[in-house]
Image 1 (tube, rainbow, N blue to C red):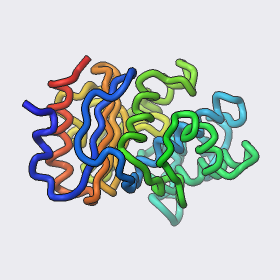
Image 2 (cartoon, helix red, strand yellow):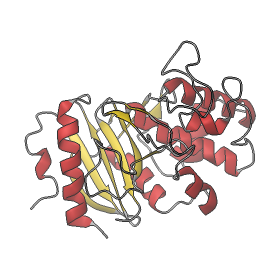
Image 3 (cartoon, rainbow, N blue to C red):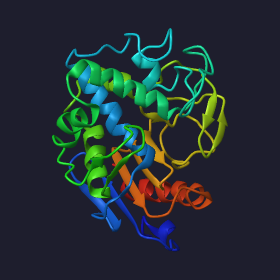
Image 4 (spheres, one colour):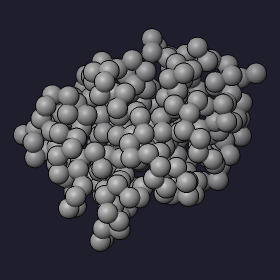
Length: 269
């Protein structure tokens, strides 16, 4: 059985790249076409922020965002700021409120400390070192990237075998921050434990979810409203990038988990 059987009835262009730490394992469709990444952009922005942490230019526990909030709160969607504008909705550390604004505030904080604008910093520290030659961020660091599935898979390989972060910081980034916080996972409803690391959504035992029933609880990544995702399953030692021309909707909630389970069944390491 093909690992891409779930995509048989797609009626729009899409590209999928399955990779392990060493290289591409399987591909489908238009893997070199540049698509919108939407919120998958947050993975690049979070990683660029963590590089600044590794270099000692910013501190995760330094004040950033609303009063009482830190850079850690902003990356973990736990600062209390709303989705994109308006008044603070909760004290820091009390609710998981998914927020573009929080990532934008984190990027502003980084830019103030690294001596350049955040887009240039992301290019210098993540995009260029990983050879992601098609990737452009033109606008918000929360949702404005475009690029190919091949380049998104390059980020997936980095996340399977990090070279830009040390092991301790990477483990911290992909472990639950502020455990036990409830909140809404966009597109999939309220979760009693809406777990996030530092910019990475962590699968844990969420249901429903955009990854597969056989995905390990340690799986982390992000999906975007443009119809995009990158998941990394460290137990299966696989990552998969999906980009397409159709916005997220019921089709994705139906197709993506099936696709993920098929990929894991065929290619699990």
